[in-house]
Length: 504
Image (cartoon, rainbow, N blue to C red; front, top):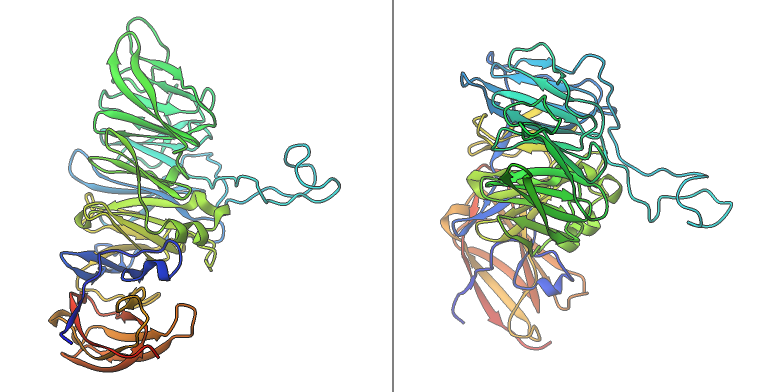
């Protein structure tokens, strides 16, 4: 029989049963598909100061504090800034790697963890059995404490979600201070293209308010200014807002609204563009230059001027792997060099009580990957040379380092689903695998065979990737598993010497 190419479509498929994903890639960790090959992602290293010393942890006690938000930018003199918000503090990291606590004086933080209230006297009348301690089943979790960030020129504006004033931090300030006069207790804030400061949820959970143009302190509507507010129809509270191209996207617990600047006397006009598409957490909204994406339960949504649902090949997996009580820790960010959107989240198996897993969408090639990584958040490069991510312990790492191998955490790997000849009713023999030249010496391969989908699998290998690789495997279906920690390994299209056998 001639050599058979093993050329499966990019991305993993984690919906339905294992057999329903036959002839697909079934699992992955810390790899991506790009330019016709599977690649290990770039490695990482602790971020250093200008003396070459690792930057110390942002906070001393990771059991009470965790990084929830990050923003990076360059000021008017092109000096780079990183500000990280935790449930308790604001930290500034200078271009020299100096960490300064810039938390406003008198600020009182909030909860590191989410969860449910339980016990007697909670929940609505008639929920669960009378005279018993109420459990969390069927109740919505309380969100973790987090920040909303936006930039007014080179100045950072920060809102501790639903609690307190809008704060301002200007480069070289000792600490952030409360901004004079804006309404308090916004869920999120945004500076629009019209140089108007906008906030959601201050007056009530469904009201959007905005300041006068070029005046972030004037919020009183008048004939000679552009300040105003509007209450949007719908159910549930409004959660977060962002700007996509020249439109303001407002997401709530249940629906999406789009606002446009229309000038006096109304200033902004809003319309509801979708229902049952609310954002899963304020942190999981990702905005790029051309679109916004967010998670909504088992669904993924995109807005680029038009609202649409994105098919997810990892929806079933995420729905069962995500720790629902901590869904508000889910954080999204983009990696523009790879056309990717990442969401880190806390799995049911997390040993840190913080995000330890991720799913990733390649929006250029329309496929998904998943894996394990102990990071609470990330930020793309731009103001920083490399993307950065932060661990549950508060350490800052530079990521996507092409020549750095991944030496800590789960090993990078990729595995196929079942591969079979015809209808899978005959035995398949493999005696040689012919890999391309890029994998030799960098990655190992294991072959797993089964006679039936529910039968026990037999493994052979691991094999070092010579060319060709002599193997001895037999079964009605087979799966290939590749792993390696070396920097830069790739897997291209392979060929296998496959021979059909009998039915027994």
